[in-house]
Image (cartoon, rainbow, N blue to C red; front, side):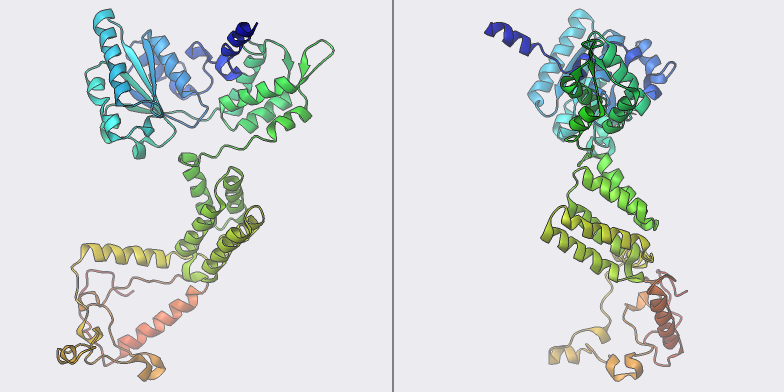
Length: 456
């Protein structure tokens, strides 16, 4: 009896595994790749399968996709996991593929899951075997290949983007799971509106949709005809512990950060709050959100409203003091303030331009009149000579004095925008510029040329 129970347990497969499609025709989604007449579909059917990278979020069926490609092309499927495998495993898989090709005349599709987790040397180990045709290489990744994969590997493969499944595609998959003999085989009834709820909660992830359905089927009560009936109460119970997808290290993560930043920059408090809450709800560290808000306060608001920087720092401090969820209200206060604050990237542009100039221009010496003169020797060399102490000048401003190297005397980096406090700062700058222009005590000749931007 114990042996029989063990065998039964060992043979159990989750619903998601049992519902793996056996042909491309039953594959859910990705019609932009494998729909009738699409280039990849034609290449497979014509026996012209090539090495590729499958890039897409979790749960869209990258492994299944690769297996179906091998089955359709009638070649051997062999897989490795970058999490569990090393160079030794790669060599062994390649040797099996070489033997298979030479002895049996059969090609091998070598599937490498989470290929981005291989380091450079491990990725390089595939290159000669891709080039000589020993294997048809198919790597799967949730990360942007441009950033995570070697350029040498990318140059030998084509990148295909797998997309989240659409709600109607998920609903179709759920219906097949309810009716299929390998699925629930008609033992559960699910009203249409609950199928829609499952599809929405799955957020494009087929595996997650099937997992929700499977757990719900275990909790559903049998009806009068011994067929279980899924209710809203049971489904809500199942989904209470179901967190929304938030890929903390991948492209979804950066897409949501981008959406948050652009919503603030676009002065939309609702969009800003929505994307921040999406990130928090998905498990993003609130302190990370706080850091991003501080950055936004400097980059997109700057001196148009200097209070924004202080407010975001206070929100960060509040989050660390109170923790979640109390501290997150301070983040909400900060993000809505940032969205509605006047916008200026003048400081951001000035900083970037100044750094770019410094990197490409000579290391100009500090003008003699600005140099420090702590010793009599340095004083005798003229350090600090003719420096005009601003506090001794009218309005504490030494009109005509210069503080940049002479070669940069006409450069202007900081250009206040006509918004918020920078209106006043711009007016002050214009007044100072006029005083400088009118001064008879100009440090540098007025016709000095500059490689930088002249005064407007």
